[in-house]
Amino acid sequence: MSYLACVEIEPKSTADAAVIWLHGLGADGHDFEAVVPELNLPASAAIRFIFPHAPSMPVTINGGMVMPAWYDILEMNIELKHDEQQLLNSADAISKLIDREIERGIDSRRIIIAGFSQGGAVGYQSALTYPKPLAGLLGLSSYFATSQSIVYNPANDELPIQIFHGTADPVVPESLGQQSYDLLIEKGYQANYKTYSMEHSVCMDEIADISTWLQATLQI
Image 1 (cartoon, rainbow, N blue to C red):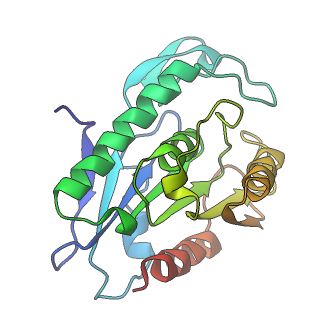
Image 2 (cartoon, rainbow, N blue to C red; image 1 turned 45 degrees about the vertical axis):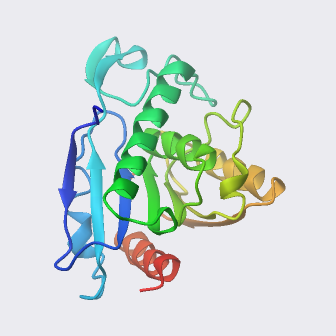
């Protein structure tokens, strides 16, 4: 079995939970590595953080420049028109990483999928179609790209979902984050939504809220 290359941060004690955290377009698995110590998690938190690297590919909206991307974005319009098959392939690759964590002894109900921007779009697809119950889904400055085509798996009907977004985001408009939340609520999911006065980035208040959510979701 081949897996995406990843940056992995192991806890001091044997891991009993995992967070698989996907970066955005043009970044790599190191992008959110420095956030882990900023979460100020308790010493007892035995969480393995996994930051996969997206494959490199030409990206149409960037003039065909080759860069790390979970899928090609074809048009920079309000819907961020994308190559859906590439997105599905990336979601399958993340599902394999979930499978690997289970094989390493982590209960599926202690695995969280997190993603920023493009990574969040892949996270929606992967988490909501996964055939075993997961711990939670965290969407950061992202959007639900496959909302019209996804086939939800009932195993994650009760998946806790937290969405964070910047009110001044010029890349993924905040309205797309709100639409994602509204759709999930309409579908009966346990979703929460919060915004921050920021652009397409993360801020310290958000990092503190991520920490609080992780601890509550994993009960640590």
